[in-house]
Amino acid sequence: MTDSVEGRAAKSGGKRSGGKRQRLMAAAAAVLHERGVERTTIADIARAADVPVGNVYYYFKTKDELVEAALARHAEYLDGLTARLDELDDPRERLKSLVAGWVDGRDVAARYGCPMGTLAVELDKRDEGGLDLAAGLVIRRLLDWVERQYREIGVDGPDGHALALVGAYQGMSLLSSALRDPEVMTREGARLVREIDALA
Amino acid sequence: MTDSVEGRAAKSGGKRSGGKRQRLMAAAAAVLHERGVERTTIADIARAADVPVGNVYYYFKTKDELVEAALARHAEYLDGLTARLDELDDPRERLKSLVAGWVDGRDVAARYGCPMGTLAVELDKRDEGGLDLAAGLVIRRLLDWVERQYREIGVDGPDGHALALVGAYQGMSLLSSALRDPEVMTREGARLVREIDALA
DNA sequence: GTCTATAGTATGATAGAC
DNA sequence: GTCTATCATACTATAGAC
Image 1 (cartoon, rainbow over the protein chains, first blue to last red):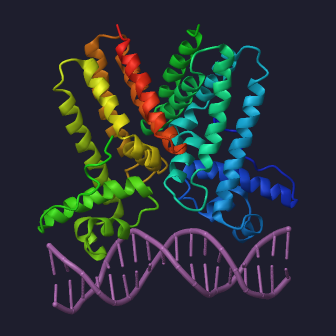
Image 2: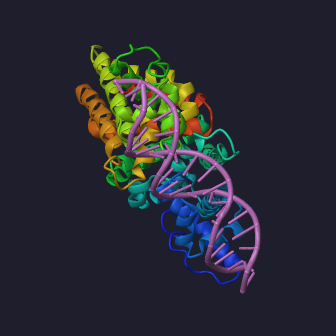
Image 3: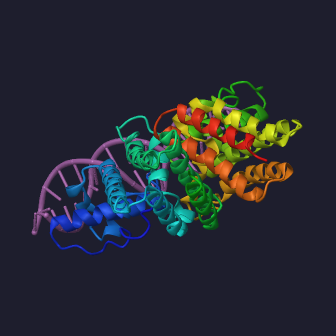
């Protein structure tokens, strides 16, 4: 979520297999986001990771394992983000900081949508392979964290508030990319911040 | 939007070419929604429309033309819906009726997401073929209609309200399908109705 | 561990008989 | 207008040399 930049140009890493594996994960996350799961070929990911095509299968036995790896990478990023936000004293500030991060990623969102959300849309249409529900689990993690913030603030129905906030993020990302307009993120972000400020 | 049922079992129609064309359009809309654009094959649509595979190309020269046809069908449905809602006297009732329709389609949304929204997600990741922005145009039509309702009500920033309402719909559809939980639609729908009722 | 060559399969699209 | 047969291509995945 709000992945935007940092993994995108992951050309670093050593020459050990760990380096290649990392590069492939990073490339998978970025390319799957930009091109979508079904349109992405193994060759696309290999090229982005600067790894020979045939060598990919040494690290990931199937394309679905690459999707799984991208998912895991997004989950890791999310955990890191919430851990950093947890260092803030006020839960309101944590939520507003989360929203600010979403708005910061407006240009990527306006072009390709939310990395997790669009991945979820594609995987949801499957009914086999066991990956169809995987994105939902990561989104659930974010929902739970947001719910904890609202609970700490002391509002009624913290789960409903969490649903509304994360839903708003998914909705504004989708509209922003469908309309190719980053301003959607800015405007909706400002509204969300106002709503958080207005809490008792 | 909120397409759900009525086109899904369109096995009626005569034996004239018009009938087949209609059946193919309806089948395209339904199958593309359920399986996604990239996973859907011409054969899938032909089977659903009960038309021999080779015959499809007589009506639609490429797969993209079928996508375009599905898009047009969704746009038609949307126009019909808003025309019906326009018969209601109070703009608040029109909006609440719109939301009620979204909630009614909760089971389909929980499985496959919003037909227009998920289509937009897939098409957005393209950058050629001219269909990459087509879904955005249909969504824009809905946004404009919603904005007119808010303007009639007399609220400040009717466009911002429209963005929030349609964004909420897209967000709740995505979360509902990612979590495979129709209740998300019910709960978020109730919140949206409360917000409309609370307008000055 | 790394990489090439290729097998196997699925799909979009067309040619041409009826 | 309708339908069958098939071509051409693109991709996943594997076998096996280095």
